[in-house]
Structures are given as structure tokens and as C-alpha cells.
Image (cartoon, rainbow, N blue to C red; front, side, top):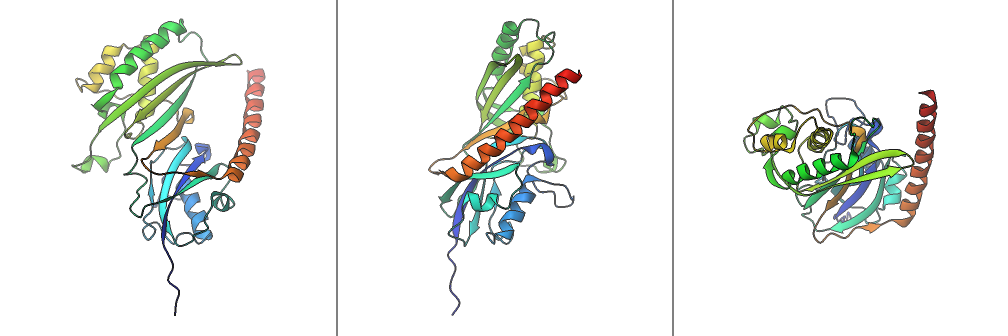
Length: 290
């Protein structure tokens, strides 16, 4: 008699550097490297899933090409009771890692059950002339950022897929819970750190908001312009801020407790330190070359 396999629902917290990938979501008709593609390959090799449909797979979000994540979340069904983050990491490239796992209820969906998502943008300021007075620029940006709080139609702050426009039920309304803007000056380099938390985000929404706030800070636009865009009194295509500065920082859920794999965490930190030393050296070299 064949032994019946017990199915469990698990959720994983995943981090990655998106530089070498064509976004998070797998591209079925295009042979391009994606985070999800690498993850699926690892899960299949370990016999944790057969395919996404049979495993009821779901992901909290779909980051764009070049965007990074500290805490992306995916969920799926598996019959392997001994799955661990370190096991999955053994099959993943160094720039993708799993660091925490949760055993969830059978109906858990990483996308639909998410309460909020939080992004952080690192806005590098290489040109001191752009913001002649940083204090004034920050004040302008913070005052303008208050307009984003609450539920709004973010059509002017998104880039919809062609298929989205054909779905009648597709909504461009999102609710932003919090926007925080802080200055970070590290070893002579100036960054403006922008944290945005919302119930959900549209494609390129964060990066377009960052671009709009930057224009207000530099004096090119004022906060009334942002109000007009949010009220749909005008339409304007905003160039999104570069993808390399964006980080999916966290996804929140009710009643789901993730357990961090400390061994996996230590190994990940070692990898990130190597990357930090490498890029710090390259940055210093580029300064000399300039």
C-alpha cells in the first residue's frame, strides 16, 4: 500500500540583489534570468514542489528589473516536512537567499494575505548643485510627501502593463500608510532615504513617487503639482527613479511567525560583506579615475 504523503503549507522570506535579473517574476515566453526562475529550479531539484500550480504557489510582490529585496515572501504546498532555508540556499546563486520559514494555515496566500508592504529608496546625491540648500529641499520633500498619505488613484504614478488596462476590475487605487524622508551622510556621500509603506503598490509606483519628490526638493516642481496629479486634474508621464536604488524592505502579515535560520543568516552576512568590500573598492577606484 502506497504511503500517503502529508501536505504542509510553508512560507519563505527571501532576499536578493536584483542587478543580474530581469525582475522577480518568471518570464514564460522569454528566456531571461529572474529571481522566481532561480527559486523554482532550486525547489524542483530538492523535490519540494513539482510545479507552481500544483503547489498553489504565490508571491507577495513582483519587483522590477534591477530592484532588490530584503524580505520578499513566497508560499507553497510541499510534502517534505524537513524543508529548511539552508537546504534551499545550497541550490541558489549567491545573490539570492532564503533566511526564514513559517508553517502556515492551508489557505495562506503570500500576496492576498499581506497587510502592508514597505519599500526603501536610497537616493544618491552626487551633484551638490541640485539641492543648493539641503534643509530647504528636505522640508519641501517632507511637506509634499504628506499629500501621498491615504487612499488615492495612483494612475499618474504607475506604469501599467498592456493587459492591466483590459481588466475592468483592475484598480489603480492604493492606500499609503506612511512616508518618511531622512538624510544620511556617510563618509562624504549624501543619501536621502525614503521609506514608503502601503497596502500595495502599482508597477514602478515607488520609483515615480521618488522622482516626483526629488523634483519638488530641487524646486523644479511644487507640492501643488503633486496634488494635481493625485486628484487627476492633469496627466503627466514621470520618469521613474533608477531601479538600483530600490529595496523591498518588508511584507507584513497577521498571525504568521517566521523562524530565522541562524546558520543561513550568518552565511548570508558573510556573502554580503564580500559584496560590500568589492563595491566599496570599485567606487573608490572610480573616484580616482574621474
